[in-house]
Length: 152
Image (cartoon, rainbow, N blue to C red; front, side, top):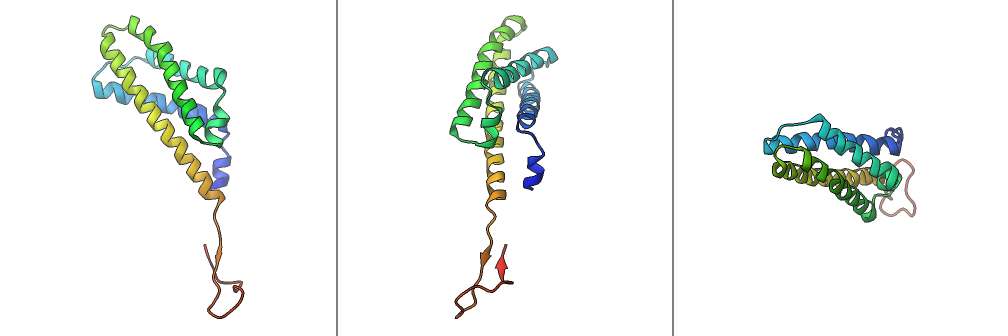
C-alpha cells in the first residue's frame, strides 16, 4: 500500500484534492441551498485557492507529508483568506448576494472539514503502513522465540 501512495507526488495530491474538493463542495452546497450554479464562480474560487496554496503559502509538502496541527491551521488560513478575496467579488456580481454568501460560507465549511479529514486520514494510512510490526511468540518454557511462529 505504501508503494501505491508513493506513486503520487505530494504536489499532485494537493492540487487534485483542492480541485476535486472545491468542485464537490461547491455543487453540494449550491444544491443544498437551491442556488443556481455558475462555472465562472467555481473557477474564481478554484483559481484563488490554488494560487494561495501553491504560490503564496507554498504548503503542498507540509500539509501531506507531515500532517500536524500546523498544517491544519495553514489549510484553514488558506481557505479563509481565499474566502475574503473571492467573496466580495462574487457578492458584487451575483443577483442574490445574501444567498450567495450563505452558499459560499457553507461551501467553505464543507471544504475545510473534508480537507482536514482527508489530511488526517492520509497521515494515519502512512503511519500504519510504516509501523507494521512483527510480534514473535515464545512457546512456554523456552528462552527465545521460534523462527516460524510470528503474528502479522
